[in-house]
Length: 456
Image (cartoon, rainbow, N blue to C red; front, side, top):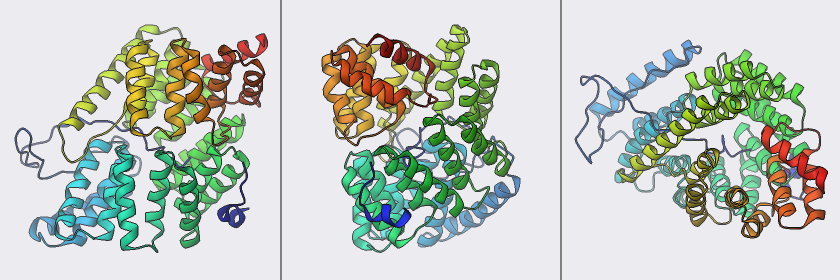
């Protein structure tokens, strides 16, 4: 959908990573380097964890030096808010690079809270607290702190980006568009362009989404993690329109600029999977999984192992994913400061092992937190479909379609639901659109959708 919005006129996924799948890291460090207070109390010092990806050596060297310098100030000067803000920023960026969000988000939140305890209206601390809550999927809390930060400084582009993200995740897409317009008018850069790209995507405009994401990559510094993550998102947009050649080009470009970049490797894994080269796909995903902590790599391995006939490996990984996510959830319950909500991810994890009752439990838990979000509604609808409760699936899939999104997975889900509910005409139109250009979507979904289309 092309709207007559100001930012469309100016320019002609960002959901994050789409807030980025969070994992709990279980770590051990020498007692001389960390002070841990016992049960129910907080860690008083968060050291940097070794990176698994050692390709960016110079960057890692600079990060460690900056960390050491900042920690000296923090330890000796309890009144230095600037050092605490800088240290929080370092932790936040390290979370992006490594995928160790649970650990680094807690570390950053500790120092953000120390600043806010002394200066409740510190703008940077408010924006960082918003960002951390959004990262941990506490979207309502994140949005509230972004609004508070905007009251302190209504002329800052970063805070409008947080408002975009918070409103997208809570399902207020009109407000998200307005804030994206404001953001790009203040600072047209990689962050604003990428958010515009995602808003265009969820409103069905892939041409505009690709255009804006290209502008985002051009605005970034080649080799920076943020730039190469954006380049990977550009590749994924091409996957969704069936242009695997262009997608692979951008993934390889990201790897040239940032060797061993896990998300680019996973992109090439999807390309190999589409080509039915299962050994190659497995190798890409295993390598990505060894470099960054991200459940999506393991979930992809489940799919490719199943397609390759290695069901024992697929089942073992599925169990490990569920166990780890449950540990994350328990960890969050025991932390008054921060904890990750992952019910939507849990719903899909349980679907992979055909545990529909647990999948529905988690899908509805997520729905109760943010009933207007289109992705959450799609999740609930798909769980009901898998339970063969097609009538219950209908209102949720209708909400999921309300932005006129053209994501091929969404369209195929919707088409199958409408077909089973007896609306053959709508089902046919959705399935035809979803399968147009042979997009790179899950093989089982593509096969089921094509079979259903042939029967209509």
